[in-house]
Length: 164
Image 1 (cartoon, one colour):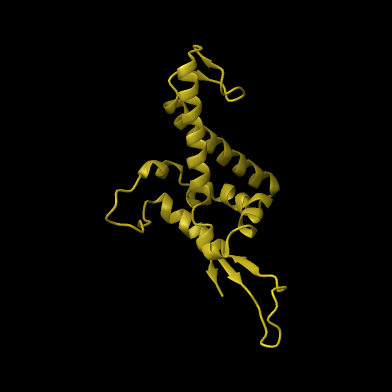
Image 2 (spheres, rainbow, N blue to C red):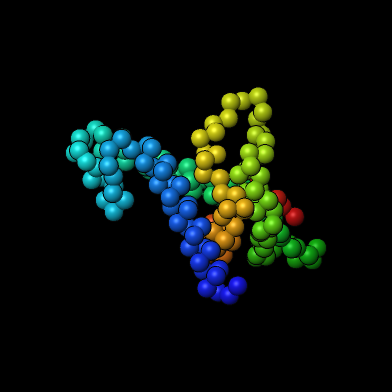
């Protein structure tokens, strides 16, 4: 139950995620494909190469969108101003609710999230990218600790977050 066990568990989750994403990419690409050189698809049919590259790019885009879904609804923008000083020099603080984020991820992976527009057709293509806390808890925890997520949150617009 030490650091070695946690590293092994994280490695297992990363390999499972890689296998799952590989299955999705493999299903979208008609020919063989090497991730080291995405435009080298065999056979070398130029139209097929471009279509496959676009498909792979769209899969990556949808995966990142799903990974970031719910981030802004877990952010709280806080500005402190005293009555005496109403200057624009006050720096806002952004607070991120990790527990809420993990709850959203869990609901999305179980298909229990409700669409904002219930009468509209919902594109369920991204549901295959939902990372649930039951299978990917260590990956989500590592994602929450990344500098990239912190940077993404800190550069968010005030209007996209709850404001206090």
